[in-house]
Image (cartoon, rainbow, N blue to C red; front, side):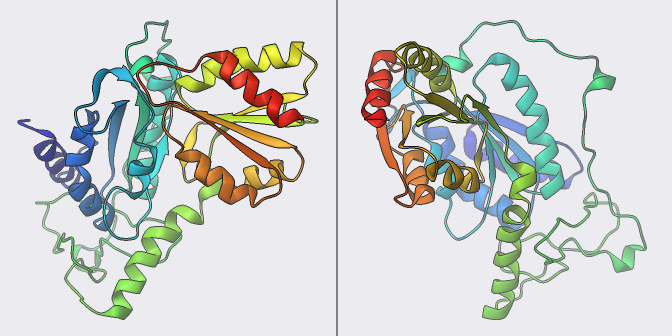
Length: 324
């Protein structure tokens, strides 16, 4: 495609044409996609976008690492809606989570993001690809029934409706306007409430099914380090060094970024002295941690402006501060 705007538009068209679709971008390209990401959310179009994050703003650091698009992934387009975002920390997870991203996108008819970063994106490691028949793939939920009865949208808030292929003789409409169950514009306050509530609830009500976390040594810990992506691999050394120094510390890796693991963070906040949040930005996901912790423990942000990963000793110092 000629640019990222064309790419995301092609994805939406391809999805309604019956295909599973994906594109990859970084930095300003992700920003260019935002209007049509909102269209995909409103039209409940399943698609996958991988964002290999680099330092910004603007052109910034095109080939150097950052994790600065985390909030943009959730809030980048206008209006109220929900998306799903996953964050791999290895080439193996880039493969595994790509499969999962497609499955989640199809299950919930929602744009799903793979929020990797430059370091993981350029990393060379062994990737094990199972035989195709062993890979769990969620097929598209195709409508089965009389053509006259088909409705592309059912605003139940619990699940996504079946889809059909454009051009197969079904009468429906696809628009970014507030719409009825057939997809035709219905510009009223009452209908907008139905639509937007559905977009939110189909994700929020299934959050426990969607969220994936990796926890190590959190039981009995006085400090827990919450991280994601490449930063999680740096955290592992800082945690080992802290444990060697006698500090009771564990780690929680956010594999699913959005929806956020609010429930688990809230549980941990009631048991620990501090939660340490290192990330390669000036403090984005730490805001969600602070909100979920609700003052039950200290929350220590270890930010980094990008261009390189953290020095593990900086994270270690934060762990020691949290253990006091």
